[in-house]
Length: 385
Image (cartoon, rainbow, N blue to C red; front, side, top):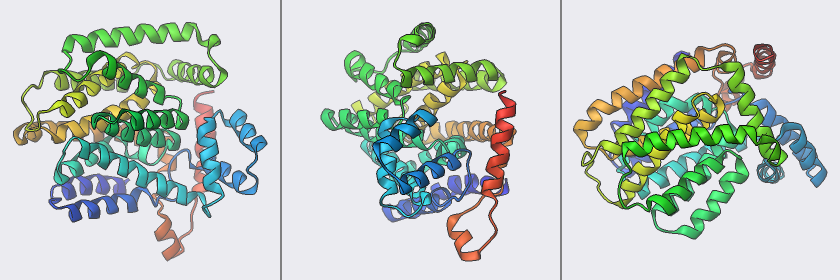
């Protein structure tokens, strides 16, 4: 527990000392050492490690289809994952590469908004204050989809539509939920067209419209392809079992306030061009979707991942006096949210103690990841039985 708190405090404080490009690279390298070299830590690594091992033994069409039907994972991801298994010696290398790609996509997207090195480091720290454990340490496919979408959005903001479309498709191949991300991009492309920041009224209207669409999708679930229909059923089942608790209400309120802030803070940033306008529009739409899907907890979280990433970058564009108020609020709420996630049973089992591949190799410490993972899966099944 203490090591995670130290990491969050370190990331915020270290970001304040980033001034030059070399400082940023050192900062990113420190983030990589902690996140990318994690070892048997997080709640879904055993599944991917097992699939990786199976692909190392045999990577045929029948193997891909077998795992596809067993785990209900995207075929595009499985093919890519299987190809990596033919090249890399162990699954831990995949974790490291995906972490590098996530950091790279974040840097490229923020740079497209002309965010300074110091502000970029702060943006990343704010994002990790929310989603270090559920995104950076877990949700492998979702993390990859987020990375692809970040690159797609970078190209879109830069006016390069064709590569943007390519990376949008790659995001969907990595995780089906990226369809929502791409949908937001399409809405911005054809409806808002970057002319001006959408109003707070649009935020409310979009939330109501998306909620109505969710209800319609649930009713028509049987008409969707099995790969999509199973995802929808999963989101529905988890929503029913978890309910609409205080955490969900707090996240819905926070998402609404983020959208309100992005739509109303005219002239609060020194960077005022179409790129910031586009970023603000994306934030407003993502906020509306997060509010509307508040009851569907898994879907809401997947939307919230990208929302907080974009909002962290947006904060970097604000004036210093505005940052002075906004940053502590966002950081405090993020830590509170992550503490609730961290301490909720059985999640704490797979994050404590933290294990690092480099330290394990250098010190030869005994590892207990397999045992903790088995205990987590048993507790998780009992919780949602």
